[in-house]
Amino acid sequence: MIKGLNILLVEDNPLNQKIVVFHLKKHQHQIHVSATGEDALSVFKQQHFDVVLMDLMLPGMDGYETTLRIRQMEMEDKQRPKSLIIALTANTLDNDRERCIQNGMDEFISKPFDMIKLNHILEKSFEKE
Ligand SMILES: [Mg+2]
Image (tube, rainbow, N blue to C red; front, side, top):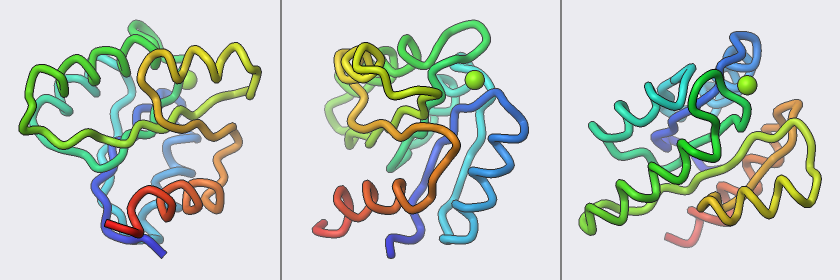
């Protein structure tokens, strides 16, 4: 089990925030919650996150745009390790998946939030490091 990652959750729905935070804390991850893409970008600018969990539907800047800007920030700062960005999607239509990948997301999981699925992704991405 992967523990102790630094995770940025970008999610505007208070109930979803609570559910995800509950599961992540149980696995001893450190978590910062942003309710908007704008807030997520200003937090991301200040510190590194191993993982970003990105809701797609956000008020103002959506999850696609926020992800694009995060990837731009990483490209402008070569010292900065790349974060794993996982989209949280309400559905798993092929269109959405394709757009996620085009915008620089690495993975996606569908809602309702499934900690088992997230753990599979985290194990795949971090276990060998
Ligand atoms: Mg939302």
